[in-house]
Length: 183
Image (cartoon, rainbow, N blue to C red; front, top):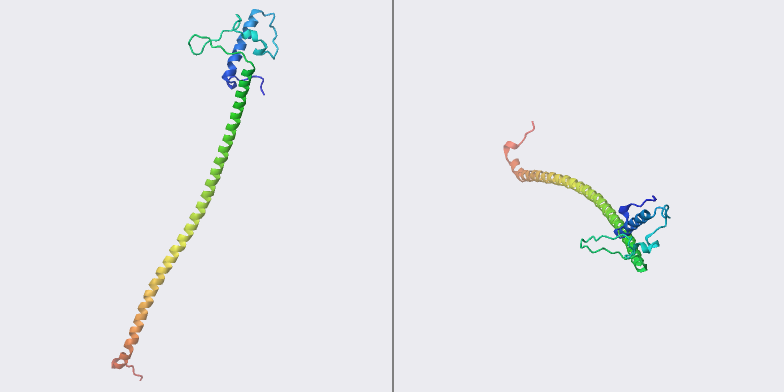
């Protein structure tokens, strides 16, 4: 992890005290260079509460962001403010975790929907293949059925012709022109 902190990753409630502290350190170092040649790493605003006192003439004067001309006073961090900051930090962590879980649920739901779409596509393809198979056999049976109907009609006509021939056959022997003589 880098020892440098990105300013964009810090919350606005943390930035204001940080900039105020930086300004105070700059002002103090300019007052007496010999006293502040090397600063310890654990210098924090709460190590020097008198620097940020509103009664200290060297403390930086905060400017009002509302434009009303009144100074925008920030209270000194005490136990209740620290508790509030801790709660805010815990809530922020909890919200991030909740958002991560929500993204994971959404991703699982999306994956389930994709799987369902793939199953439906496969089922649809299978049903289409079955339909084509049935349509093919239906057309084949319909053609065969038409051929059988035509054959039945032709056989019916032959049967009708034969039965007519049988009905008229006794009369044909009575006619002399139909008698064949053997010589």
